[in-house]
Length: 249
Image 1 (tube, one colour):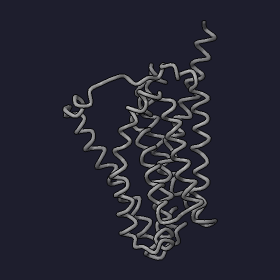
Image 2 (image 1 turned 90 degrees about the horizontal axis):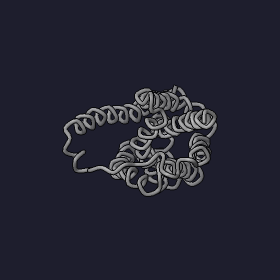
Image 3 (image 1 turned 90 degrees about the vertical axis):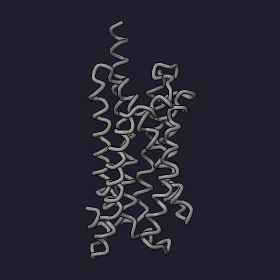
């Protein structure tokens, strides 16, 4: 009995570590790879910075809410499968963009990153709490803290790879989610039977809750400020004569 409890505890820890890693890649892409490579992308496509920024923002605005479907998908297929699927979607988007950067692929990249990242917001928080039931607050804090580290690492990773080949960062980063998807399925195979399940609830009831809208407003302003600064600062610095790598650092 004690051995079984210890084995389950170790499995929980391993799966929690993988879950933390899953939050890193979307942060790296949006905070580093896309903003730092913005000048190269506008040059490659022959479009203005304003048009590139507008295209990315429209794609995020349209496809971002689709991340809300994560709860519905998790109730049908299980949390583990949805988490693994989000990583496959993210990795495929990054690798496809690195290999085929045609004019339509930036949208595929942003769509895959936005949907997979948003799926992790709700489902990832739930999984973090369930994997650390006695320290649920610490689990959620660690999840968001590691995501912040990804935002810090993003420009550094972009700066390292941009001197090699401007799409090298997308290719290198794209491999990570695919590995994580395999680890999620392997470590989470014991949870397919419903241990990590999604309970039913009323979406209408949530939308009527003033606390929900207060939280959305606060997080929305923070996320909007992050997106604007992440995209505009590297563009400003390269316009002032900095190299893309120097602007990243």
